[in-house]
Length: 280
Image (cartoon, rainbow, N blue to C red; front, side):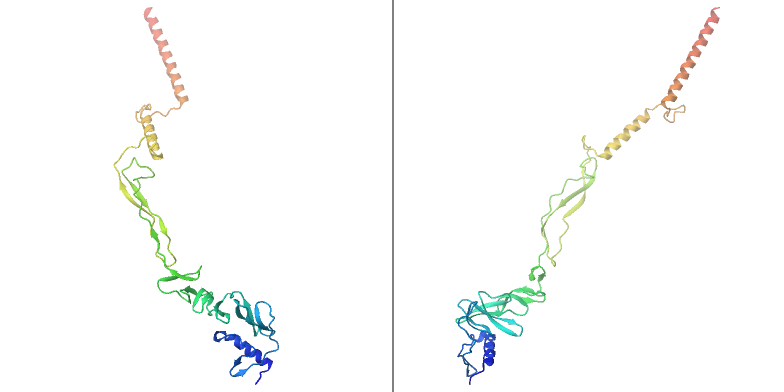
C-alpha cells in the first residue's frame, strides 16, 4: 500500500528522530513492512550542505563530513546540515551519516552522552557529571561551577627574633620586647583551614647600657633639660630667709642697687663730717 504525501512526511520526520537506530529514510525504504513511494517534494538539488531535502522537512541527508541535526521551529522540526554541532549537542560519526545528539538536560556542553564538559546553572561539574552538591572532601567553586579540592592555608617558617627594643630604642632600658614574623604562602579556599597569625611578640631582657650621643629619644632629652634647670635653680640667689631663690625682676634689682649706692654716699658724707669735727 502507498502512503499519502502527508503520511510520508510524518514517517520521514519520525525517521529523523530515531537517527540512532539508522539513517534518514530514503525514497523507497521500507518501514514497518510498508514501502514508501517517492515524495514529489524530495529534491536532489538542495542548498546549505544538504544532499537531499524537501520543502516541508528541510534536509533529509547531508553531504560528506557534515553533521545532520534537527532544529525545532514551532511545532515542526527541520533537518539542517552543519560543519560542527551547536552548543548543547555532541557529534557522532557513522559510516552512512554524521549526526548531532542533544546533551543531557543538566548539561550545557558535552563530549559525548556520558561526559559533560560544562553544566547548566545550579549544577557543579565533577568527572564529567553535573551534581547538585559536591562530594565529601571537595567544595563548589562558584566561579568555574566545578567541584574542586579544598585548599588549606600554608605559612612560611618564622623569621629570627628581632633585636630587643623599647619604644623604638635599643638602649637606655632593661626590659623590652622582640618580634618575629612569617609570610602566607598559600591562602585557603572557602572551606580550607584559616591562616595562623603572621607576627609574634614576647618580652625580653637586655643588659642595661647607656645610649650613645644621638640615640637618646625625646623623653631622654626632656629628662636632661629638667636636670639642668634644677641645677640652675640651686645656684640662684636666696631671699632674706634663705628658703627660696630670689624672684626679683631686673627693675627691682636696679632700684635696689640705686638705693644701696645712695645709702653708701650718705654714710660716706657723715663719716667725712665726723672727721672734720675731730680735727678742730
